[in-house]
Amino acid sequence: MEVRERVELSHLFGPHTDLDALPWRPFRPDVDIMIIYGHIGEGPCTALLRYQPGANVPRHRHAGMEHIIVLRGEQSDDDAKVSAGTLLIKPPGTSHEIISSKGCVVLAIWEKPVVFE
Image 1: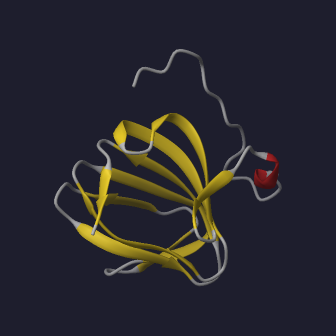
Image 2: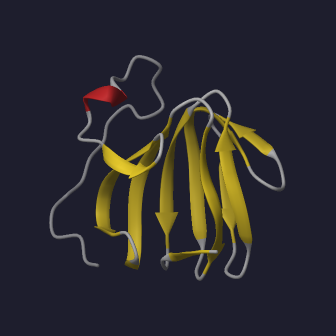
């Protein structure tokens, strides 16, 4: 998907940024999404995901590269627990389930759609 307009989200790492003011919509139970570009399930996509405490995303496989930057809080998967300021890269063919015991906000960049198992 081609980006047709300039996209700017300022101060994503700042502790006083009001991320709640963004146009979130439901994605999965207790997980909201704000798509920056693309469409979920259709090629490249970038989005912010907001996990409520205890929320999870079920096991899924990556058809392409996935880049996650944790902006707030922390999340865990099969390999590790990662916290704010962490960049996590998952290559094609990998799979994992994600849980956020305390809640978090992440920037997700998907090269190709993920496949839920």
